[in-house]
Structure formats: C-alpha cells, structure tokens
Image: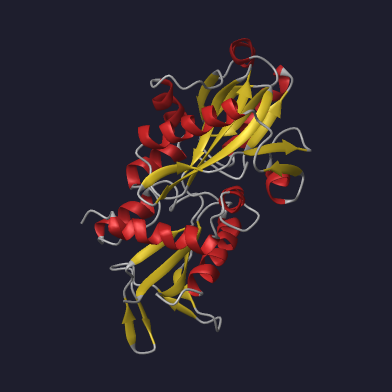
Length: 329
C-alpha cells in the first residue's frame, strides 16, 4: 500500500532557509522509494502550501492539513517534520498534528517544547545527575549585574538565546563590560537568555535514533571549530572540522553514547535526535539536545548514520514507519 507523506519544512524563525534545505534532502530520498507518494509542505509564517515539482504552490487547508491537487483532496498518512525552530521544533506543530490524528516523525509536543527550551531541559537533566555548565538565566527586562554574573559563571562565558538554534543569538564573552551587549544580541532572537560557563575540552555530538525496535546511539562526531566556538560559520560555511567517528577512547565513546541514550529515555524522545556534549575534565557535560536536527548530507546526524552503514533512504523511511506504527490515536 502506497503511503502519502508530507515533508514539512521551513518554519517561522531565522532557521527557515536551513530547514528548507533539510526538507529537500528528505523529500528527494523518500521520493525515490516506490511505497511512498511524497509532497513538500512549506510551513512558513506568511503561508502554508504544498510546493509541487513544477514550482506551483497549492495552499494547505489548516483545518485538516489537506491540499486539493488535480481535482483530488490529498490527506497525509504521516508528516516528516524537518522544521527547525518554531513551530516545528517547539511543540506547536506537533500538538496541531496530534489534534488532527496525523502521525509525525519528531517527538511529541511536550518533549519538543522541553528540548527547545535550553533552560528547562538543563534543569530537568540536572535532576537526573547529568553534568552541565554553571549557568545564569536572564529574562528581557530583568535587572542585570554583570559583575555578579561573571563571578558566578567565570570568564570567558557564553551568552545564548534560550529558544534558538543554528547558533543564532550566541556570543562568547571575555570581558565583564561586554555582557550587556551580548545580552542585547541574544534578545534579538528570544526574550529569554541563558549565560553559561566556558567548558574547555573536546566538543562532540551524538545522534540517537529508533532503529529496528531499539534506541540506538550513532557513531560520535568530534567538532573542531576554526572560530571561537561552533557558530553559524562553523556549522554551515565550512569553518570547522567534523570527525566521525570522533578521536575518543573506546571508554569515552561508550560513556557519551550511553549518556545520549539516557537523555533520550529520560526526556521520552522519539525519532531522530542529536545531543551535544563537551568533555570537560575528561567527563561529558551536556550542552543541548536537538529534537529536529539538520538532515542535509553535510549535517552531523546523516554523517553519523553513514558511518554506521545506514543510508539516508533507510534512515528517513524507518523514521516514517516508526512514527506510523507507534502513533497513539
């Protein structure tokens, strides 16, 4: 039986263009499989539409997430969610689809909202004994004492927009007098900010997926940035080296993979996820969890899947099948 799949891409944030690239890769790989009829679903702030191969755009009916194409109403058996940022990564899109009883490949709405909120996610994981950087939380409009912040987290430190991805709204701060300008930079992306201590060590990324009925950690990627940190240029403009598998000892690899699986289970995640860590004083410290990671061929999780001998067709199609099989009506 042929299943009708919508690959949702875009979003309302600064990451929309990156999401469109991820979605296009998923669309191309799933379209090559005979058991799927696949459509691009552009979920953008100003419009929701199906983008046909001809370039024609057909508006989506938000009342039931359908489209009228060639005199036929198209309904979807599953949505492959590749949206970065709101509404696809913060739970809004997941809640919408769950209300319509349409399976989707990412985690459920609450888990999405939790992982998207770095401050809340860190707070939950700390309670489970997972090491993180020292941090301070600041909301827009709060009175701020830069010296007190520096005394608590130390310098240098990182100032991050709490609910943003792709390193938008992040600064590495080396002087107390630069904290306020870094906050203003972060507030352009979000009205909540997290300030974290600098962790000196090896940065790594670990993908975790549902595969053949089990939760599996993929090979670890080591990230070496040419810039001050793994910023937008390092992630997307070639200013970094990404080594898969990472140059870690066997025990370090097993430790961080086990930790990534623990996070997946503690947070009750689903689908394709990626968690970031820094080995500081030889111990992995959690940075953040990405519940809708980038999926271009150059993205970290596809690199890890390739190292594990998993093709992108297999990775993406399995995500669809797991979403459909595990959907609770």
